Image (cartoon, rainbow, N blue to C red; front, side, top):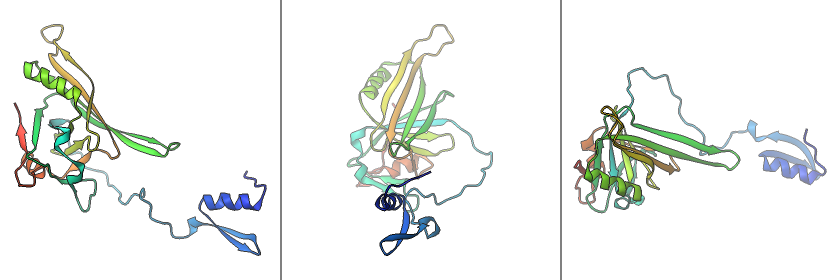
Length: 231
C-alpha cells in the first residue's frame, strides 16, 4: 500500500507515473489514468501480427561473404522504405570485393541472442556465427590470422537464400576457433571459427535472393557490381 506524507509528494508521484490530476481550490479533486484516454504511439509498439507458417522450410547455411570493414561506410546504406531495417543497397567508394566461403557442414550456424535489461533500460543483439572449414592450406592459414586481427562485416546466406548482414555498425570479431589436424584417419582436419557481433539491431535482411542480385546491391557509385572472390 502506498502512503504519502504530503500533497506535493503525492502529486509528484502520480505525474511521474503518467497519471492526470485535476485540482479544486489547490487540492486534488480527482484522479484519472491516462490509460482511459487515447494512448500515444510509442517507438516500441508492435505493428504486425503473425499467422502459423507452413512446414516447407529448411535450415542451415549455404555460404558467407566477408567484406573488409573500411570498404563500407554506414552513411551509404539505402534502406527499404517500408521495412526500414532491411538493406536495399550499400554503395562503397570503390568496387567492393566480397570474399566468399562455401559452407558444407551441419556444424555451421548463425544465431542472434537478445540481450535486454529492464533495470538498465538497454537492449542489444549478439549475433554469433560458427563455421567449420575442411582441410588446411597455406592461404587459409594466413586468412585465419587476418580475420583474427580485423573486424570484417559478414554476409550470411541461408539454405533458403535469405541474406543477412552481420556486424552492421561494429563489425565482427573472431572470438574463438581452432586449427585441427585430427587424431585418427576419420577425424576432422581443418578450421573451426566463431565470430560475434554486438549490434543495436538484429542482423539486417538484405533485399536479395541470389548472388547476382547481391553483387548489384553492393555496386559502387559508378555502377560497378561487387566482385565475388573465391580463391
